[in-house]
Image (cartoon, rainbow, N blue to C red; front, side, top):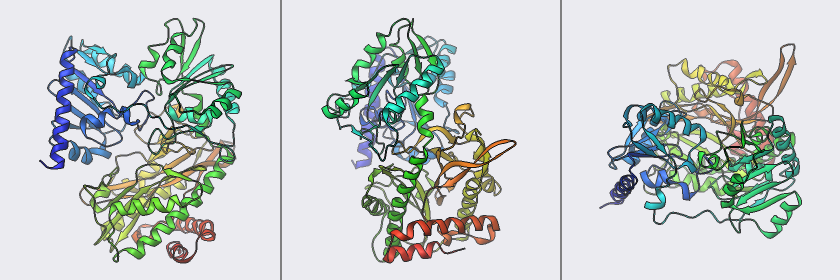
Length: 603
């Protein structure tokens, strides 16, 4: 039996174990979301239950298993990947047309048996999701059972809680103290009528307390909950993760460190007069079940989610420094790559190794900000492709190489995608590259009223691509943290997210700009820069914002079809390349400097 078949057999065996547990608990089915008790995008190993059970390694997806059916719901970013990874396991891949789709809820509306009991672990189920799930089952006359973590029964060697140490994010990289941040949160709590606030989202906790960790790969956060009231804050975290010195430092700021598991006791002990603020998109049902019924619950977005999205002028200046370090690493990498092609054996894995090594040479570098996507030709058509030792391509012949990568620096977080030609790019490839570039430039040049809801900007990037009868299945832009998660909210330039007040664009927000074109089995093109909202002008019609492009790396003009570009687009590209040259060239020498000079030459 080969390795692949052994993996599939293991998945089939695990599903049978889950079905045996369903029978023991008189359940007709069980839901396995991609989530943890903090609703993290990337769960720590202990809560990678969906991946463990299904073998699907993508970062998003929902698995539903009944006694005679298993379905994995994924959006278009993962269709090809999911089909490949779960083939032969008995799991059906269910296509979602939206990143925010709830296809499993629709399935239950049609298939849940009347009187049946359906299980899910409330500790990893968001409040909003629980309401949709409960309503669907109620409509079928079925029952939602939330108190069972079946993986405690079937996953014998399940990982424990992460035990790595927490560390401080200090000045000058953290220009605002935690006492100032706590004061800001408390002001917002008062405005909302709350006197206590539960925070479970890990990036919010890291931001509020100026702390960082390594509990989640690539995201500098740590597993914890926080309860904030008007004169103290309690941080619930695993034993031994915070040193005595740091405990003492936190105590000076009226922050008490308590065991991770005691948060539920603290919630249960809230007085009848308490008014607790929770964010229903960032707190699980399992946490709210511990809040006494007599306590007033106020639902609103975490104040820290807004606050951390709006980077200060000092933070933006630090991010610009990080972009220079990242740009230097990229220039050295691409210089090496172009000289090595045709002379060395280079694979998609080599790309990751060499690029990561160049970033690691930078003084403020901490880690990658996500798993590098190095995708040659057909692999580039899978937006979240990941090369592995078992399956990867050699970079040779003709085509397009897509590289999506990023770094965590103490001074900021980066995320960039570039596409370069290998050998000769075809006419069709150059056309796709150019229309993606036109979309990226169109959004980059946008000016819009302050408070514009970010989903409304999505069409600006798509319009030049739509003009050719083409579209792409992912959002155009996500918020980016400050030495925090590479994906953060509340803003998202996407046609699939709720177009609500939380998505309003405000000064200081950093967002990606990454349209694409994907041709399954052939190639993919995505060009990505990070941009920050900055003031543009004030008129009688109000304040207007525009984007400052932060990313510093040439866009490969060898892939451009000039006849498709207009004068304004060419002017924007030439101006961008002038900026890249001016900011990076003083930090480069030799072959890398010569490479930068060639790649920033005017079009």
